[in-house]
Length: 173
Image (cartoon, rainbow, N blue to C red; front, side, top):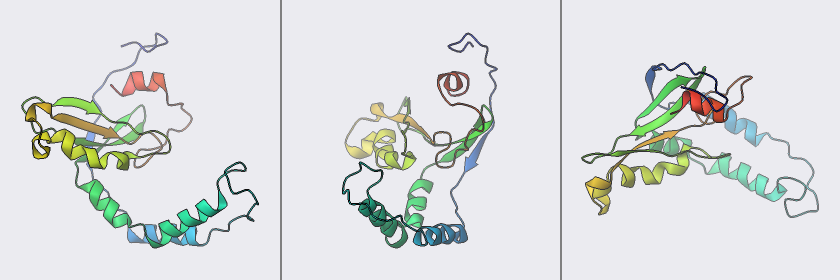
């Protein structure tokens, strides 16, 4: 196979390993403590985002994360779906792979953008993989693959390598 620049890519079948999210409570507590201890800069007079992130918004966000966000609930929602990790171009890629319930499910890849995550797609997995449960035909089923982009979620961050068209051409088909 050739990349956009005419370079050869080595094709091989990387090992796909099952993955389950299980963050130790100590890690969660440590992160929450660090957010609670954040020293915010002096508040500027601007109420918009013209000088960077809005101070009030960031304070509200920190309060939400430390008092109302339920990581275990999100972890449980994610773990409802089959997850895997495979190595591509020297780094791990985490992904959900939910198989369709129909006679010939069509493959569908859903990718998030920056600064998103796979959590954005949790609500659509069931309707896409099992359309008959939602009043549609089983013929409309998809095999859904949702990767965590490199450097996001549980995918590793590329070190010293750009991630772009050449990487996608060589590693993610």
